[in-house]
Amino acid sequence: VGRGDVDLRAGADLRPEDVVRLEDDRVVLLDQRRLPDEVAELECRSSGEVAAAIRSLAVRGAPAIGVAAAMGYALAARCGEDLETAARTLLAARPTAVNLPWAIAEMRRSGSDPHTLAERSRELHRLEVERCVAMGEHAVGLFESGSRVLTHCNTGALATAGHGSALGAVRTAYARGLVEHVYVGETRPLNQGSRLTAWELERAGIPHTVIVDAAAGVVMARREVSHVVVGADRIAANGDVANKIGTYALAVLAAHHRIPFIVVVPTSTVDPVAMTGDEIPIEERPPEEVSARFPARNPAFDITPSTLVTAIVTERGIHRPPYERTLRP
Ligand code: MRU
Image (cartoon, rainbow, N blue to C red; front, side, top):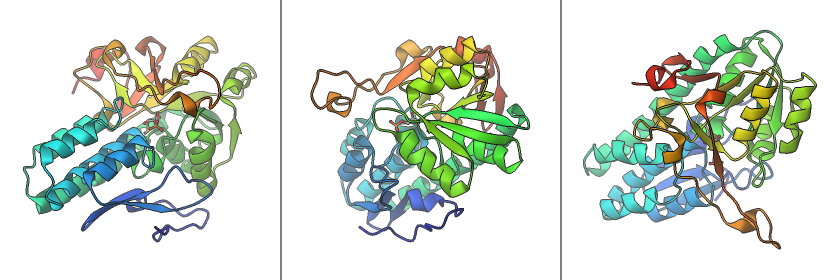
């Protein structure tokens, strides 16, 4: 479908409803597969179509996946689908982001009335955006004037359906005059960094440079990076972080160069049931995304051990080790 009424002028903020919204009989998504070349919306008219949109990364990023799944569940009720089947289909779409099962559990607690479920999914969306804004405020305390940030994947308004987690914190810190420059890791194989994060930073007018993932070491060695700031798809109770493939390598490099490694997430991304990263399922995506010709392997996420994480920021504040104690609700 068309591009809705997304404001395409540079400097215009993406509104939460630009990223994902529930209309009467459909869920409408900004199709992230087509950015930055095309701003186009995708309409989903069943929970199965929402699940397919999540699986194919039309909507992606842990909090945005959770919000889309909640709206898919509400849509299922509106369309008279069997809610248990809808929940199962949505839950199977992607395995790593805990926001998906978290959102479905929240929806299941709200019964089966279509109107109540629609309102609840919109409320979950609003609360997620509020959490992101609060996280950004807390995270500002970790930056100092002239900070030069390296980030990975996309953790902006697109990934969280409003404001952003790690990139939201960078935006807030930039607005306070604390961030000078952002290095954007391209994020092979699907380039969420060079397509989506660069697009968001360009719109926000924040100075940025895209680098290939393998250039992270050289920019750190040249002291061009003061902070590495990333989001997460799931954090275990001990603070181990599952995030986009390549995050672990950045954390090792940051430790070697004594650069703070900061993770910014809403508490909907903290999984109190997974005690360590070993218990987090890692999505294996089609090998063709890596190589259309040769045998390939495509783990979409990796685990960064909590020992490499300087601080985890949630809407509750800045958490420091030992995370099993400081992250506990
Ligand atoms: O495969 P994706 O693009 O959904 O992966 C997203 C990430 O790894 C993000 O860093 C994570 O979801 C945090 S977004 C706030």
